[in-house]
Image (cartoon, each protein chain N blue to C red):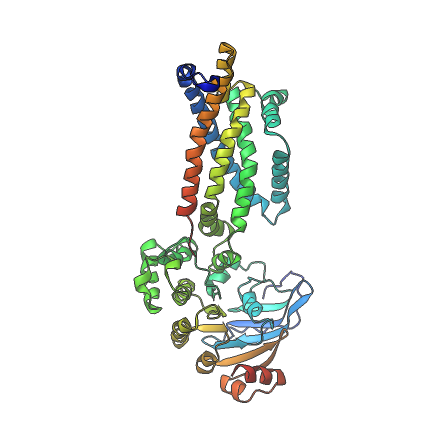
Length: 221
Length: 262
């Protein structure tokens, strides 16, 4: 027994269960950020395109996702999509919702990253005869990606925390496991504080890593 | 000649006999940014091997003039021929045009995430699809020419501005262009670094490269230029051999400019 009613012995007993939840949380986040980065890359490039056929859908997508709660998006995917005949299991729904959500934020990150590269880089590249795709691939994106790595890291951390919302569709990630312990023991304090503690144990090293990358990967010019 | 279908009006017939035709020909070229007309009526011919220096006060359209030649800027009226080809004709491959016309910028614009060698071989590899070994060999030769063969493995930020600019020249030369455009390439350099870049350009001129040079370096203009044009408010208002332009300018605005800078 420690003060404030936190029961260490209970915490130690439920720790393996919580850690299994944490593993699922990390998995969900990693998949979602990976898919979200792909979505974000294409949406970000589409966003700055001179062609409206690309830029308008991209802008609408970003507006829609950023303007609606993630919780609603998760529920639309899980409870709403079956109405269109698309039945996905919880886990797939969770990853889909989180990917689409992070894709919008990452699209903004890519957009800013690409815009941060000086116009002279594009001019030098095209005046060497490279076309738009080659210029993006060899000149702009390698530089932009390095610039946005810290922002991508922060997005990963943000999504890791937000992924707790998929507990509402009964994915047994970290928070959900804590809630299960609560309903079993009628002690909310210990498992939920334990859950928070585990989130912290993941996010603090991650944000340190982001800071490190920020310094290390700076391009000098 | 291919009829061009853009909105630009064709104002004069172009004679295009392959026999001694100019490598660059601009006819009644007009260009504006919004309401601001930057080039009003530019007519210019450049022969193969010629070194042309473009002078003029800032805002006179010098940079815009050379940026039109590789289509970094789009003109509204008139016609530009490079090696006899209308660069706005529908079957003009703009990427191919740009491999024929090398350009060097005021701010160097080296790719900071690539080593010097990779900066130089990027375009030969990806555009000309030259084998890597050969591209590297040619790049090292070019670096030797600009006096930087020991720097092939450095990143741009490890070089001085003057060295970066010489690498940028080597990079443009790697495509084996017919013409080189220089857009105030020494303006961003510390005074003590200017000389090395100008030496490189002189070497290039001696080798017979066709060059169009926008610069404020009067010494270079006097020594290297075959011809100087003076621009003001979107027009070429005077055109002559360097000696004549500097010692005996005709137009009052040229006189005023020359007296200020000499």
